[in-house]
Image (cartoon, rainbow, N blue to C red; front, side, top):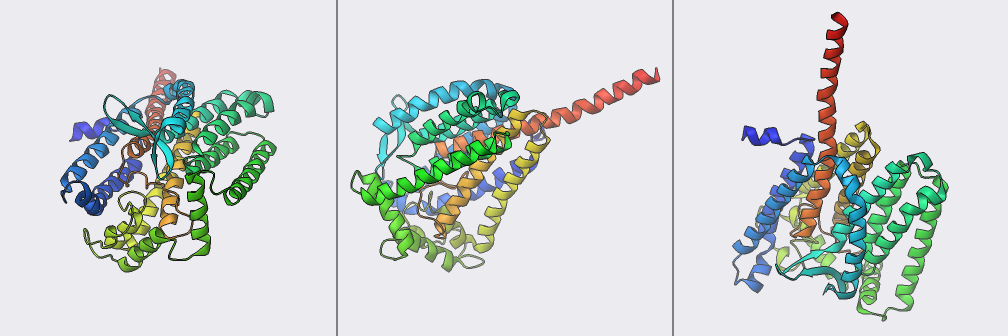
Length: 392
């Protein structure tokens, strides 16, 4: 055990947060998959638990491998990743597997698995933006040399994600703008981009209400906005069941495995797992989960501020921010603060690629942290050698 712990580097607090969230994931997913098991495996929940456990363990493996790689290699890989992400998103948009009228998944033919290409695209774009900002620091204020090479891929990737997953596109766009702000892009360019985003969002909402029958996806968006703004229980079945789960959970919860709303909530093991957490473990656990994500963000920001190099600093901020932002969106949906979006709770919700790419993102943050630890070890040695030479 000691040998394994010695091989684990990086911020120990982040490792602890990931372990706690993963344990909670196993407990709550096992409790919430009962209806899924009755539907597909005659009530046997063990196959689903076994699969989820393997996914979580493989996520830890990915995190371990990624955190051992020097962050400079991710800078080199960023160009390949973004070039790969764009055609994959386009292919998904045209031929991907559809769930709830949204083409989000690509099928891998040989192994008969599916993966959500937007998860890969998120990491690819964050790496690319961080790399370009780091490389272009000498001309960072220039529109043509710095701003355009960043904003064009951002608009392309977010535009390809948007038809199937508006919330992911919006989160990725906002994360990219935050990185541009930290990376010293001119404020007038950032504010101009924000203005374009606001105008586009307004036109987008207008289009939804003027042409709701263009396709089923647009109709779904319109229904979600109307249900959220109207607040009527008839059209807000998911949210109503979620609020019942939270209200009946109280402060201390019903107890592990004693959820009743898991039988009524659609996707209690993914989109609405936060409601099940509060129902079974209580409001205190809901607050603790929020606190753990905020700790993750805080530690990542601390790592970023201590990094001597620009790329790992921006990479740590980008990867941590989008994960925490996604977690907060998931929680806000559960308590009806925003319309239903279909965002899973990172590291907690049941899923394959969502857990794996979240693990990769955290691995990149830990990679930056690991390099900081190496710098701390090297500097005292250098200082000791200087003292020895001076004494001699």
